[in-house]
Image 1: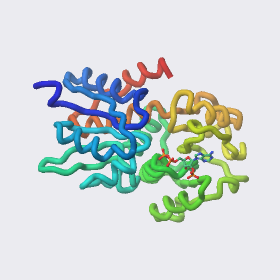
Image 2 (image 1 turned 120 degrees about the vertical axis):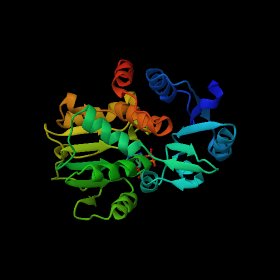
Image 3 (image 1 turned 90 degrees about the vertical axis):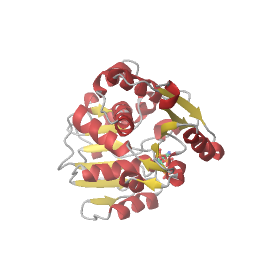
Amino acid sequence: MSAEAHRFAVFGHPIAHSLSPEIHQAFAEQLGIRLSYETIDAAPADFDAAVRGFFRDGGLGANVTLPHKNAAFALATARTDAATRAGAANTLTPLVGGGIQAHNTDGSGFVRDITERHGFDLRGHDALLLGAGGAAKAVAWALMDAGVKTLTIVNRTPERADEIADAIGEPARCHTRYWDGLEGECFDLVVNATSIGVTGGDFDLPMSIVQDHSTAYDLCYGAAAAGFKGWAVAAGVRPDWFRDGLGMLVEQAADAFERWHGQRPDTDPVYAQLRQRF
Ligand code: ATR
């Protein structure tokens, strides 16, 4: 069995600092699987050809990150429900007989991290989702599936939040508010799915939307999550009830890994290892 016959990759732009190779290699070592997992930097104009070339040359699976998740969804010939709901893909798998299947593990990775690692039972809780991009869309569906009592979505561009709520189509449970229309509301969980922590900007939100029983979760990790953590703690969230997206990153990788290799890795040691650095 040559390493080349078990070739995997993550596509992004930029991609050099991706943790995916390290995570997939750690899972593979744990389970005694031999594989190669590389980073492939493709500019948006080259993404389609790069992915097709990768699979033509024997690639067995590809993860996809920013800015290619929508393009990955578009180029696929088959799409799982999770990908269709998000309108974006982070996992591509070549199909026997040709074609490429698009899947999305962001929502499942988020729910597994918050419920199993952090012990937050989503059922019966009121959740607020900030943002309405691809990641937010995947997380919105996952929160609904996991049984939140209500899901409120706010976004700088309100029409994008409305689109997600309309697609979910459960107005009694899932609705939108204007970003500046949250005064007087309070949530058990606030999830940041905006790119404010990456691109810069303020979390201009009333502090009354959280109390000391509330959990705050940023889909980003490390320095990119610092701004939202600062806001949440200042607003009254206990520092150890703030979660960043490092666990989600590991869990979404595990879901992709299981899809490709048919075995589920133990994510805890990999998470613990990475946690020492972030
Ligand atoms: P992704 O697919 O990773 O979620 P995206 O589609 O670029 O990325 O979405 C980024 C999200 O961050 C959007 O919800 C965006 O709001 P808009 O839809 O109005 O663009 C949000 N966002 C980015 N910068 C922001 C800022 N300064 N204030 C508020 N929201 C911001």
